[in-house]
Image (tube, rainbow, N blue to C red):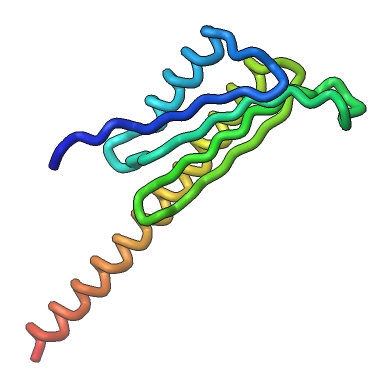
Length: 125
């Protein structure tokens, strides 16, 4: 199987993208990839929206990740600074991916237990 590279799209709205933010996003996105979690596509959007916001949290980071079988996971966080919003959004994405992995492992364990029961039932006959 050929090694597939992660398709990453980074964009910003109403704010200029700094090289530091882009480098951090690239580093954190690569860190999301594990042996068991394979990301096909990731889109990160930074938005500054002070127009409709009353509070100081007008920096928003949105992460949309596509996994195999057309599964999409989204994390969106708002904060005072883009650094905090990026960090919080990636922590939320890590949490979501961990939950997906836990569910997959539980489903596999259940399937293995069911197979073992069938084998035991067939050998007992």
